[in-house]
Length: 552
Image (cartoon, rainbow, N blue to C red; front, side, top):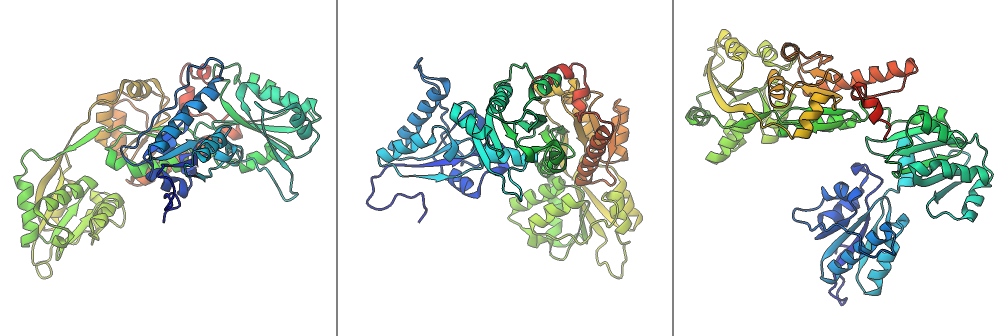
């Protein structure tokens, strides 16, 4: 029986799961949290955590947003809590399965316990799924250890509710203090600690937007933090009310953080990277970019459509079944998809490839075939391209090859390199248009402005057509944007469009392209640190960006 099921004999109420959504990184949700979200009928969360949890909920889940009441005597936070509590109770009374998601951990949430008591008072069954508290998760992402081998005491303070006695106790201690506060209240909290007995030269780190790619951490001391913020133009700022985690103590010294800052030191940390590909193709590349700390933004530049005259494709697929071909060569994931769709239309599956040799250009195409249930017989051992495939392709031998024909399903705009090379090797080729590539619709105006105005730090071009189509539908990227190309032909097209190519993949692979960009970012970061300069993103060099950086 599921732990969230109503037990026999109990009232037929709904059920409430109080769930910790963690400090911000969606990857920090627990497996138990994801399980609970998949079963939720109603999901109630504040806007700052809704996007983190909603992706795991099933389609059609009800997500009412708590709206502050009109009670003028209540503080905004209290009013929003009351609205959320009312939504929870109303849904649970109606017999529905409710997930109440809060930032961090429910055990440290200001109001979660009151909502639990309300459920208990009405006999509504509930459970608690702990989450990673911001006071613990944010320092870990900032590279700030809270304890060491000496077993330093750790105290947690919410500066908004801390009493004079609380400040006095931590001021008299030499342990680590983790303070939850707002950006524009850090200096006041530091002053409270100094007044309570802490030395002004006690090390301090302050982290905003912790565990997200917007994270930023400052090193200072209790006595210098106000000046550090002023010199860095962090404050004054209209966003001074943003929550931060400040860690005070000898274990948070700048020297240690320089060695332990694993998150903010990722090679592409915080970079906005434009990925102009079809949405299906962009997924794995975007995941790889995220592992480097980047924020990928997928903009489809190519749409894939069926051929205008499908009869040629239909004859070729029937020829596969009747033994017309010795080989079939796939040059793209889209070619695999086109053949697979035609197979499904005819009620065929991967068994139709029995007795036919299968070739694939590139690791992505091979992976798509394996997912289809087909293991390629030939993948280039060297360059992952049509030319690389020809290097390994055997010449036609009438003794060993009973059939001399190759089926080549491909795009309408494909080059003739592979066809000509196969003919030179003695093969007959059925060059079949399996799909058409057309220019996609323009992206939203905000994205177009970011492309032309330098809002992106890098753009990855994976083919000459992505260069032409992106410029055609969105305009030319700003000159501060790092241009990365998958190979010489794509780089040439980029240069013909007036773009400066900064990065080129060592081989024509999207993953090698992402690796090359990460290496570029790492070298750029190392050069800045060696020169004693702040580490900035390429987009921060555009006109006016220095002024905008004042608001973190």
